[in-house]
Length: 225
Image (cartoon, rainbow, N blue to C red):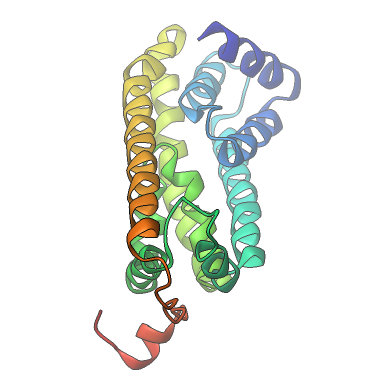
């Protein structure tokens, strides 16, 4: 805890509200840097008179937008078609093309809800920006959903730090197990996908590749999965 809190305190102490935004932008791209530490300390610093709480919230939300926008751009540049091609390679053991198609059909239909709700889930709030870019979600909608979800998340944790004051670290102590639980679930799912992919490769050798799903086609024609 101290190895993370120390640099956070130093940056915010040196740069103020701008430091809060910069740390949140970095946290969005690198999930191991927890906002559950950054935001409560910002709230505590505001209660102590060292920061302006509304400005800290605005900088944090702007930082969330910048980090999410970078990941959105990465997904957009990678594109669904390129990932579909990679998923068909023998050395790509993460997931198969059919898995990718199922996932993107779901995202294509419910992407707005996924992006909004994902902002409230540790780790997922970073990852969710990538499929949004790959799915070519309209940028104004993506930014609006990210602003809404991240704005609420940031406000809640800054407020908790403001109320708890010197005990702001209690927030991370309670949220830490949740974050670790989400990470553990992601690792289990990842291992399961790899094992399943290896088995599929062995049983489906020589089978034709499925046609790629084109993001947006369900919205256009109203097709059922």
